[in-house]
Length: 448
Image 1 (cartoon, helix red, strand yellow):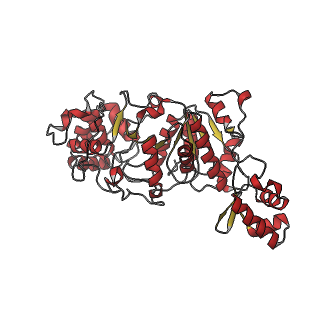
Image 2 (cartoon, rainbow, N blue to C red):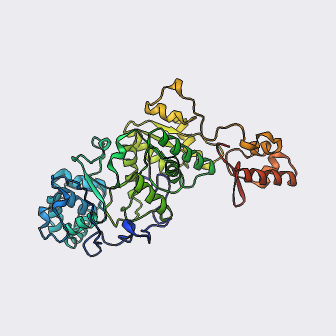
Image 3 (tube, one colour):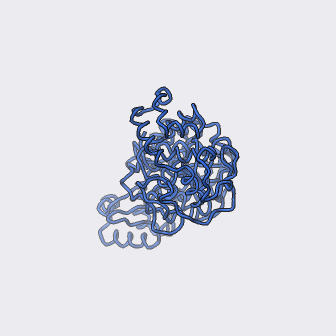
């Protein structure tokens, strides 16, 4: 599977790591050992209890409690297990299919797992090497300290079988054994749509994603994405612009490791108004394999998946695969045939995805409106070129620009205008907001 974002982000390409702001995001640095007591920050604890899988209230275990790790519930041991090096969902699932979490931890720590090669037989990785590495890590990990570390940071731990676990994932073909949450668990109770796409989006894609986020949230739809750059960020920013239903993000790192770093402010806003979820414990850095695994959770939580822009081999196409495996409707936004950012979405349409020609197409897929009631125009489909519609020269320039980045030379060739008239028209279109200038390139702004 491809990695990164909900499209083609590579771990290591963008900045990873926590931020130098206070709160949760200053708890750990990427690459540090997970919360093992040595880095645990003593912070005010939340008064809101979350029961673990064994039924214990998390308030039962206070900082400084010296009871043995065996007395902790499944949630604490699942948190520690998920933090072992290279512990992905398939490996964790194989262990839990054989033993309860506390017993699996005990066998790993003692080295007894080496006597059971059949447990991980169907999972990639050398059994002996995995067992040795996990045993070393487990022996240096204090489960109770890991648990206190997460509680002190305000992280809620959700495991299968408890009320707080997302209902859409209960019968998922690949459910996460544990989820870590920052924010309100109730935000997933309404209709949900995943808006995904490339981080290298065009202005057209950015505007469509932002309008989708704003319009869907206003209609009471929860927008889910991966907090990557590009389409993900635009969709969530649209949600925050207009209010309405809160946003939900599913990330591939620990909740204290903002990735990419540039999205710190957006990450905080999503956590404050909605929720951020991950199956990685605190301190987990950006690793390439975690993002495809994360995409299955996005697909599982969504009632409908929308792909705004995707390159031919974009990671959002893996989200589509996961959605199809779960029988979720997939919509794709048509794009210019010469735009590489729309190559993947146009291919999805050729392969049978539902065309998203109007915002209401998403509401129809959700069953919230009937086809006959669908009237909302598509993002960027305002045929009148905004305030430029009354000026024939500016209208000519906009029509020549189309919906992909163009250069001044390309516009000159397409319009036949002399340089002075063309330059004046471009300056007026940029000033009116009908064109966006990005370096030497110009892009038409949707909805103008």
